[in-house]
Length: 440
Image (cartoon, rainbow, N blue to C red; front, top):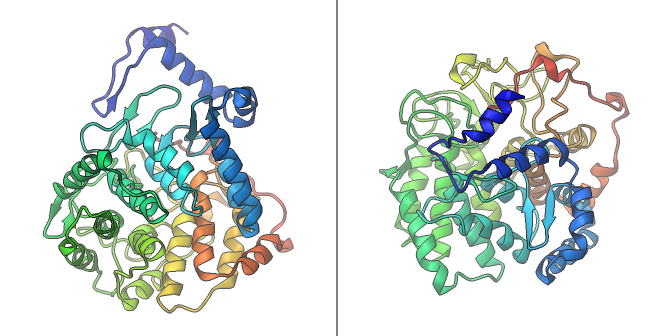
């Protein structure tokens, strides 16, 4: 207890954090993290005090859920993570990651076309930025933010272009802010490639420690999609697209697949995310069929699924390559991540792969059974465990339904959502105490 009190009286802030940090704010945040995992109670209390804008957002989301029957599981998951305050709708990443992250919010709203709601969420990062560098995270409650040198600013630009396509043009008073963000992104590029510094927190794969400055393939794909987005926003001249695409294609392993980074030959499920976004949002294909198909066909599989990043021979990374020693098969060290699996497989099918109905049925069923687990354990070390039960209701898993919608009809999605695989049983089990937690 004395250590907690002392901590509240000496509130140091890391260099990546901005905003007022007070004992009351920190205490409230800790209480929310402990007691606020079920947002329904909060939303019941705040319901009488919502602004007309928030009431309209609620009504529109409910109307869209009724119209799009095949997306009802995605809407249900989204609603489980929206915290309605009187003047603001706060979209958390999950009950575990209960702050607001650009990447989680962006991926979590890919499946909808609701400009009012999306613009409302994006504006919370937009208003917090005065440097051209969008914050990675907005802490809740309060106004503190974290800003890492990662893909968040690029995702913000892509998101703004998506909104522009939905009838929300960039107003004159916004133009300079988004131009400044594009300039911040360009300050990281060399010969069409986005170079991240050494260390951690440089992409969604944020616990991995890059020993030196490197070009991460996931991030390069996001950069390539961003060049398309800024052209649509009138901020780029189009010449950057060809260079960025070439830089993306250069990250090809000698076997023909994409590799994890310019210096690391690992396989990486998330390496096709930029291609997916360019294709799904802007109708542009950046990579050749052969690169995409070879990337997906070469992904290793084991008893738990597809390790998100693996060595050339399909093995796990050395735990020392992360900011804490994750066990093989856990979290970033070879966990199976539904969102990136869906992006990769949808991308492959759009590039000519046969439709894999079993993959989609299994993926959606596993999300249902696990209450939308953030990731699944792989390998033999966790059998019969499947996932960490504290990391469920992950909002970005709504993106699985966006990916499915690209390669299946609404009727097909409804059918596989309703089907049950009785051979798998009804429950997954996990001993969370055996596993290290997240560094964030």
